[in-house]
Length: 421
Image 1 (tube, one colour):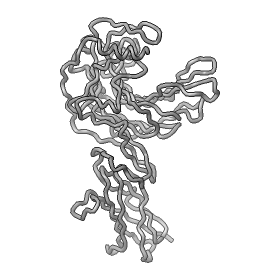
Image 2: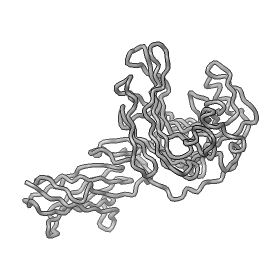
Image 3: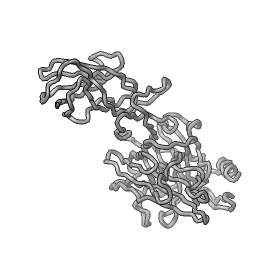
Image 4: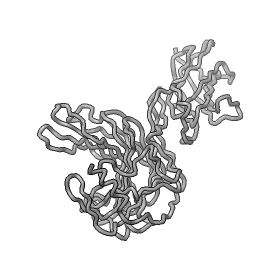
């Protein structure tokens, strides 16, 4: 009931969104998911993906508030500060006209800053998640994170735990405060929120993962990605840099991150004096007070040969291609030649493999449907010809539309194979 009252309150707080200066997105960086494990394919998870190309928030996927948290004082989450337009999800902060008291969590809490939160209606577990976002040029946060909404029974039955996975947390400007470094780069954390059998609460964290950068997070759009690989590990991705990895805190549970969590996009106030409370001037400046989420995308791993559902409407995420793992490989001579390759396809495609001998004559080929997504597979070319050892054979791979011809080739790649006895 407390939360219901707090949500209803949002509609009565005075103030409106300021006119916005639409940022120049420059040339977009298509980061996308990392290379999938062999035999697997990344496909878009639509329940946690949004291009924000409409005029209002998709309420089938998202809440325009945080269902179980009204905000960290003095910042109040307000549905009025969430909007969608111009290709962005926008979270606009503001200074409230007067201090506002909200009764929540059994006490009266004073707020004077309007913040925003968007939360997924469904929970999710393992997968790759990324967003492209430009931070507000204030000390309000710009975040992309996940957490559970309740506690789970611990390993001792009398204890309990909750989970939080922060792919990225930042602010948009520096200042004379200890947390000033949060204004640049990428900052990733994981929390194992543990309540022991004596009722004592603990925040057990893995070592923070950081990417340094000379630019402020509010200067331009950045892509922040996280791969929740399993119950024990995650990897983090910042723009086009090499990933960094993290092992979750596992001193209480061997497999700590074993429960689904909800996605959260949040602009909040951080604790003072670690982060400076935003000024009235910056909160009410339309050139500085808005967080712009260009898109958020989620991917899940499926078997490479699993068909996509017919209703799948994946946006054009990839520059479509087919690539081999290396230029030259060696393998034992066989009539079933193992060809490892990866491909990216925005819709179902056909891949045509051709095997040529050392004189350039085609001696075998095969075709298969490459289902939409990013796949890492081993395909097979069968031949009745007795292959020679220590002689290079060429394999050509072409990706094209299904039922296409040579003129409709999207990409082509070449591999050389040396056979051994």
